[in-house]
Image (spheres, rainbow, N blue to C red):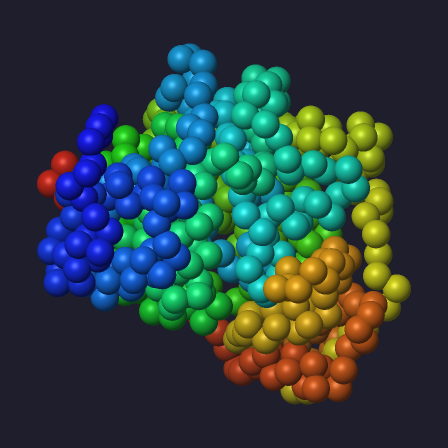
Amino acid sequence: MYTSQAHINIPEMIRKKRDKQSLSAEEIHYFVQGVTKQTIQDCQIGAMLMAIRLQGMTQEEAVNLTQEMKTSGVVLEWPKEWSSIIVDKHSTGGVGDKVSLVLVPALAACGCKVPMISGRGLGHTGGTLDKLESIPGFNINKSPEEVKQILATVGCCIVGQTPDLVPADKKLYTIRDITSTVDSLPLIAGSILSKKGAESLAALILDVKFGEGALYKDINGARELAQYLVYVGNRLGIQTAAVLSKMDNPIGRCIGNSLEVIESIECLKGKGPKDLEELVTCLGGHLLHMCEKAGSFKAGEEDIKDMLQNGCALGKFQAMLVAQGVTADLAKALCRGEEVLRHTVKQEELKAAAGGVVQAIHSLPLAKVLHELGAGCTQSDQPVNWSVGIELLKTVGDHVNKGDPWIRIHFEDPSLSESQKALLQHSLVIGEKVETGPLVTEIIQVQSQGEKRHNCPA
Ligand code: IUR
């Protein structure tokens, strides 16, 4: 599209952005190509990112940036007949967030195609890929051809990012991380939506979390990010909507890779914790409605619930495991509820220091302790211990008596220390009563005249 770019130079582009001027589509193309082909220097990339972080971008620039990042590598292609049913979700992440493990097969059971490209955990506990890798044999590395094959037979897969998919993001993210420019709306949108764009999706649902355990502590920041992502996603040609969900406590009762797989399987049998099922059905209901597999959001929610109750979602999960390298016998045993995942050698329960009603369980201290015990990715090459984890024996709203065990920690080496036990004990908040409401408080959808938000239908 762009032929001669002799008139463009990077220092001039950095100056323009520094002085709050807009970059043309051609300049953004030149910058992203330079990042991808490594023809511009890291210090210039850092300077440009800081200028963007400080001066922002117009919506037009953000759309152009995302589009250029998307096409910096391979863009997946699908058979024409799938064009309206290729769907995915993205979450801003939270402690105990195992929604993808349940939602992806449930959507496939409803007839969608879900080529989820997921990530690893950054600090804290593991990401979706770490959770799945706690299942012996599970292979996250699949070529675009293999992904297409799995979608044709099973309907869903969860794989890792390959080096040829959005290479510009890998480079930009690394430099954002070391230049304090991660928290920039156009850069976040470019990063998240270029990867979803490269999946050539028909519809995308975003789960943007707010609260004590989330990136945004209050709803306003989360709403601003959600509106921005919804706008850019739709401009990219993906039907995009977002839900704002509360993240004050861990999701479900299990945290840690293999424990979260086991809890996800319970949810795939319709026997999961209420909060996890609520998120899965809400996100799935919206996606089914958006891609016209369901006549309304409510009908979509019912379809997802049915697939959890009738075993179809679990069947898809089992088939996905086999398609991604798990032996048929192990996949079957795991889905039957047999204890085939590795256990830790040691477990310890802590007892409630007072009686009353559980008002909150702060998730960040739990994640910190688990990280220290080896459950999460570390900067170093230390391997993840997939069986390290926490079970919450009591959850928000439960009544506890003084001395009741409320948490069980699964650990090995290193051992659980006294200071870690004290940190965990402080994360339990007990009072006289608690008021709980729905996790999802708002939906952000795009309308022709701009973003529109309304409360979640009851
Ligand atoms: N996840 C991404 O893929 N990119 C980002 O910039 C952030 C989260 I923040």
